[in-house]
Length: 95
Image (cartoon, rainbow, N blue to C red; front, side, top):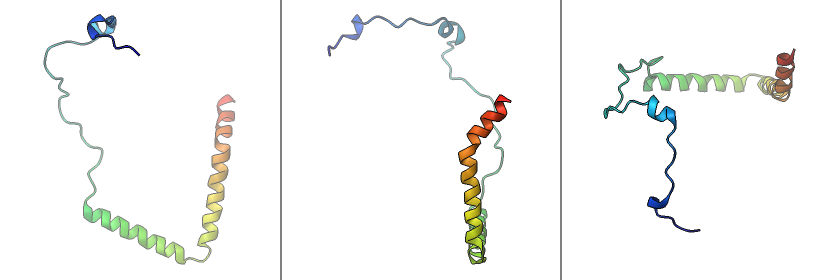
């Protein structure tokens, strides 16, 4: 490996779009007004309420007879979907 001084290297060719596509005004670009958020930020109280609700639902589900069987059946459905989705989508696209 040899070290070549930068002065001896071949300059990179400037593409046409670089020269014509950018205006060199010396100023930073401005994007006008700030974008508006799609929704408001969730407060800490709302977060705690949602976590409590989900924990209660989880406890209720665990106490339900047959919850494990429901879980296993849904898991089987999702695994079958994962195994076949690609081929099914390809067939649908091709037809």
